[in-house]
Image 1 (cartoon, rainbow, N blue to C red):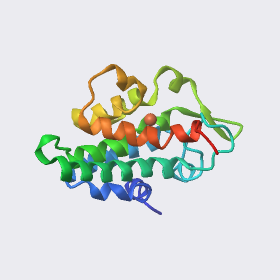
Image 2 (image 1 turned 180 degrees about the vertical axis):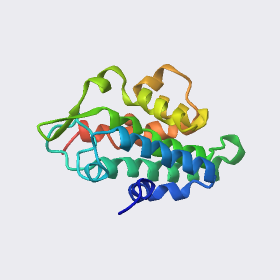
Image 3 (image 1 turned 60 degrees about the horizontal axis):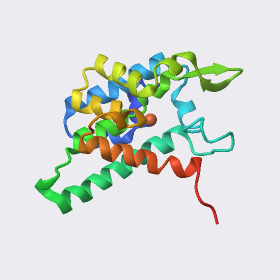
Image 4 (image 1 turned 180 degrees about the horizontal axis):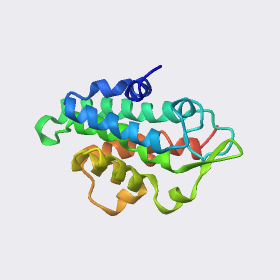
Length: 185
Ligand SMILES: [Fe+2]
């Protein structure tokens, strides 16, 4: 039997990329707390589609999408750091923790209806940028990382984003919008 924390690390091997051990632990604990509160299990996360907005035929899993966003964000930030150096520094630990946590609140957006994961009432009132910040704050995740959770989606268009939040926002949307709608030959 895996411990709860081992389950989180099995879901998210990218946690090891966070150099600061304290931040890595807080990030992992936030996911653990979300799994404890969610109707979804870690197995569900590897099987359910990553969004409910792209119809019933979408086969890309929740984890495949979330992990892809973290990988894209990290590679983009490394390129920006190497080309722009001190002109636009990206904090890699903050970026990676924020990318891992951006959608953690989604675990509270689901209810089970006849065995299927559907959007629940809680998620209608509190979209995942809000519930994600609430979960992360309980685990003492610092504000610069909570900012990424808060600002990664459309709500973030209303505020000034950090460079790390910009990167996560675009990594997320470039891997979501073409599934929802794109020009097809
Ligand atoms: Fe999101």
